[in-house]
Amino acid sequence: MSNDAPRILIVDDDPEITSALARGLELHGYETLSENRASEAFERFRQGAFSAAIVDVMIGTDSGIDLVRSVRQSGNATPILMLSALSEVEDRTRGIEAGADDYIVKPFSFDELVARLKVQERRTRPPARPLTRLDTATWTVSTATRKVALTEREFALLYQLARSPGEVFSRAELFDRLWAGEGASSENVVDVYVGYLRRKLDPAGDFGFEIKTLRNRGFTLDGVAPETS
Image (cartoon, rainbow, N blue to C red; front, side, top):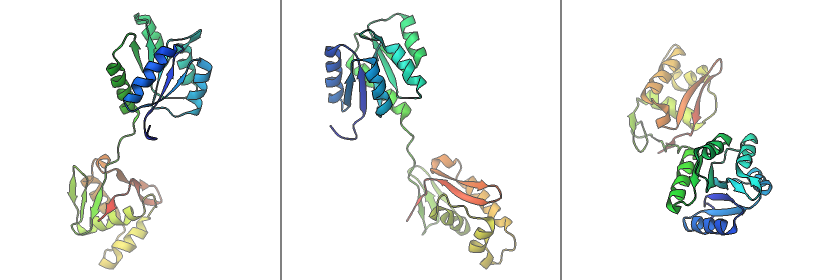
């Protein structure tokens, strides 16, 4: 099993169900770990990083609903699917109120279980950052879906900030580096060009970064710095 395989915690006291779930999930590319007692399962939640968990409503004499409630009270946000032969609305409601993310009733289609797991994985997966490039030959900023042409001075300002993401550049520093030698007389020109860039690169989420103003300090590029070509 690949080290990158999603890890699923199975909590059920029935060895046949646990074994069947583990075999089926591993065939779908998951890594599994099983526990048959609530106390041991709680420790697994505390110690391990799981993509999701499947928890039976009844774990022997233990309550799966109480386990889920304790996991949530501990601050753990692992997606949890509750599993039970009980189909009454109040049982599903109790599970959801305890903190479960979904509820599946036995008997169930294994394909449905996998589909529900994938929904929870997508919900908790961090959004992908767009790959952004600065082209020094054409003064453009581009991603897979957008391409923005900049003026020479706009590009020079963005390039300066992108070379040191997170570093704060004062207004005076940017003015001295980019405008003083061109005969500009006021540092306000920096604010004007920052405004130009923000309008052209709106919304900033499309590019994975934004130019932030830090009061009384200056400007910084916040996010993933674009690559330069």
